[in-house]
Length: 356
Image (cartoon, one colour):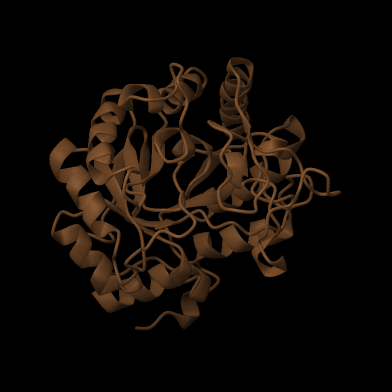
């Protein structure tokens, strides 16, 4: 059996293989509610053989949404729709995960196919954004409000309550989103965090909010269920968050009981020069894994079974987290297993089409 299709145990949860459906924003919710689109989007990939599926960024508060059309988990009414999805995922042999997120200064934007531009607080679908410091993401964007101590406490409560709802909805893994220039990443990076209080300045201060979020989530999340953190391992910009910072943070996260670091990059600087190419972010997962022994997930233009297997076989990562290839092919794991010579079980409804 290939490593790609070998199981991985995380606390009480066993993933049947190392293939993860990455969080991918669908911008298809109304008032944060999941709907048939989300059920089919995630459900088809569970049928397709993925070991773990992580929802798109689920906003922990209305003002934490990237767009007015984001998935949410800020109120109890969201639970029922999400539970329908988790039950279907689990019925098809996969594990259901949820990504909890707050967009910070990158909130209140149009959907990508509507231009993706910032929506002013004075416009009907817009709202006032918040951030560690009153610095817009890019020139021309509305200026966010710097969070007060009370505002920070509200964020912590929002994450804690979102974790409680995630458990009630049947999720088995939570991923805390601290990447891609969203609120927790904004606190990590000195480019977006220019505070002079206990949440700004030193590495310890800039990582404080993330660690407090983790503690609040852990206060309501069962010890037997895993916790992931997604980070942007570098800002790709001088003076920003660095790979060295990420290694240091991963060591802290390991001591805090985090099970996997999902290693992405970028998103906090509008015009960062990112050397995009096949597997371009894998080196960060490899370095964190080697220097901290933390389990890592590799992401970024991983498109074939052979590429994924090589990443695992050379010890660069423990999980392969795939986004765009899953948009092209919901059944990627079934096809990857065939390419690797593994006998992956197909849904009985599809068994008659399985290559022999």
